[in-house]
Image 1 (spheres, helix red, strand yellow):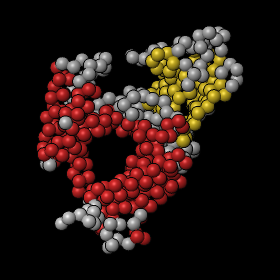
Image 2: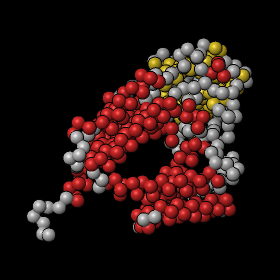
Image 3: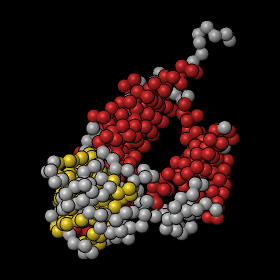
Image 4: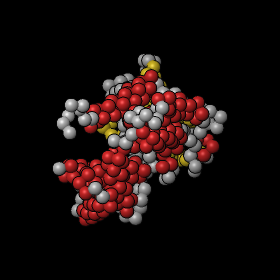
Length: 411
């Protein structure tokens, strides 16, 4: 039943026809501008299948072979039958890796579920150092960074699959430098070297009818990378800039100002001012309409945002997404807490050394912002860390109680 459920989970997103996109080469591994996201999600998609097959066969090789065969069948169907899908070598590789990861996770869970003493402490140390490494890498990936190649300024461009901007872009500047359509900026001009920040200001004139799909207002990009983009979505604005994760073809962080543009019933030539700042500590956007009322949103750039780099869809995130940040950080801490608690089941491990792997993760979460310049964790994110500790400890107690033999049980 678990294998069937995993196959259904794979079939629904991979065998559903989609609108025809730009075709990609079948030999590519990281394909398209968000190829890193697609590769990672293809790995995750096959993890349940690998785990389910290992739970039945108890052989990692069987899970890997099954994942490879299923992936090849899907790619053949996408190549010949499914409209809008491209078969690529990267998909097969990612899917096979996902099956291997699923089998490894299932095997590891069985091996570590009942381990105690020094073996459990070694496992907690491994999990702690792995979580600390994830924290450090996350801090690196969300950093703003200048582009590697010259950027073309695109003034209200029309792209396939997107609507044209029906308002009027009057002026725009980057870090105080006025921009003009079709001019070229050198890489040092795409990020302030002293503050490591990018500030974009734009003056728009309405009315601006709502857009069902994204309508680009101004963009700085080349065929390989994007410096920044300001766009309309419905009656709001969305803003993103270049970060380190973009070089791995992961999704850049997107921030939004909802329902701020003058609608079609507004006075002609109604002016709207936009001010967006991307710095190591945060991404902020401010808007001021004809009534001069300010609307602003600030997204602190914390390691809790790492989950957003792998989103399959373009979603504007903000402080209201704190629960997702908390859940991500809790998931990092759970295995460390579980194995730390499990190590206390043996007298050979002293209580003073029980929680040091968890302490490593906590210290990294506190120290990394000071080293990198990103924002410290919010109180809600620390709450997620605490929940991860509690969940790990509770899970360990529950599994231990299930395997405990009652004292009055017959021999």
